[in-house]
Length: 290
Image 1: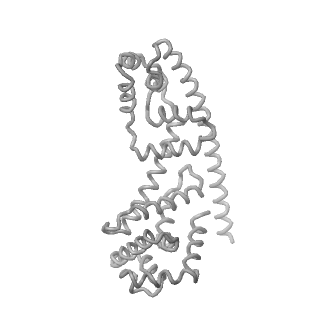
Image 2: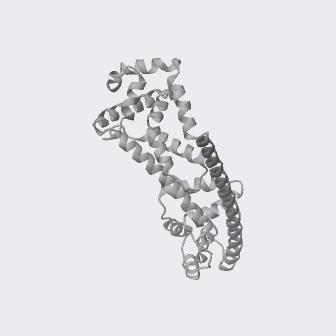
């Protein structure tokens, strides 16, 4: 469902007669809503982009979020989402050129706004501005991380698969498996949130194409930046040098097959995105012609 259809569905929920009593009851308890006879009146203030209404907009937003968090009723979430629909549409226009299908991008932005509504501290100054800023930051961070994940998967540096004699010697000299694990962990420099996004994206897109062992191998090498030499030493700390070399060659072949499958998965994904965008452009042209 596109953003416009989604917001129209929310507006229908807000205008339903069965929900009218919710705002009437809330305005008796919440000072920020007391001066508004209807929800539409409060929404008009939120739609006002003049700076002299910023304090009123913050107060109304704070009241709506507090009521939603306390009651968990979809009515209040719908009110907040509709109020911030213009921001979402502007954000949507700024996300052109990515490799995510349009419907998935719409769902991503809605999800990130709801996450921000759930977690944003209500004592923040300039709450409306903070809500918009955090939503944009989360959306673009997710998109940038996914793009980085694609680049990681589709480009393997030659030295990533080269057998590192120096590393092998160091690992063979390690006194315990704990020191091997510590060396591997030290190679992980990615931001934890970005790492979680990369792993979730990889499991979602490639979970059917790769088994768990191959996924873990790709995560270790392409997301965590671990060399295959370290990977082998970490998983086979008790093996002899000769055995470890044989295991290394076997895992290297497994890694190559996994990467080949991933490239096919992403090639199909990009084709699906192009077709979805072409269909969306065609619908836009037809609506304009009508």
